[in-house]
Image 1 (tube, rainbow, N blue to C red):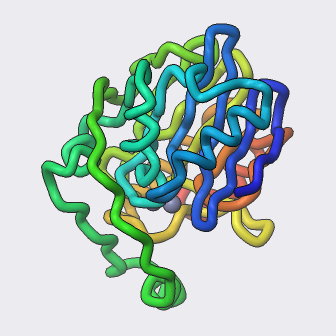
Image 2: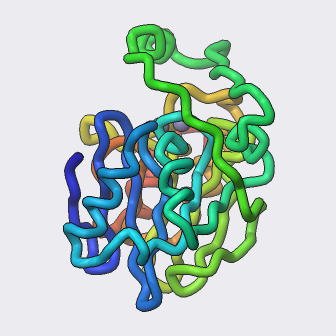
Length: 234
Ligand SMILES: [Zn+2]
Ligand SMILES: [Zn+2]
């Protein structure tokens, strides 16, 4: 796993597939997404690598139920003293109480379906408890007040988390930034809803954008998000 410092308070953790982020407050750390199944020891190493320890992790915030975002959560939650947060619409899947519905490619470009069929099979995410279900506009207790921005479409409970005080925006898979291009995330359950969410996200004020896949943008992130809205769809 690769660790990238984006800001003194913010590190990107890059796994074999997908990414998570560590946010540091003075009273402890928040992990946004949790990597693939088996990622727990790598997250512990990442904390040690930046001068902290696993016991400094206070909470895990899950942007949506996909296995490359939730996979490590069960083992990390078992460290103790950690609260798990997720949107109410994805919580049942995350807890293992409902099956994960697949993406729908009806109105997606053909290359996206081909990409999905060719992607490596990941281990299923072990079920994990959700201690706090959030919804749009809720404020989570980190980063000076972390505001949930519901971004449904990728999954029903897909959510971004905005730290207005720091100009940081965690996007999960609502938006991707791959091969130098900021774009709508792929493998959506409802693509038109996901496009509507992209429009909402593009209106937020952010300097730093953190994606589930692809390089983070540090500086003028809002402009890149606005440019990602397809023409004619604004
Ligand atoms: Zn996803
Ligand atoms: Zn993902």
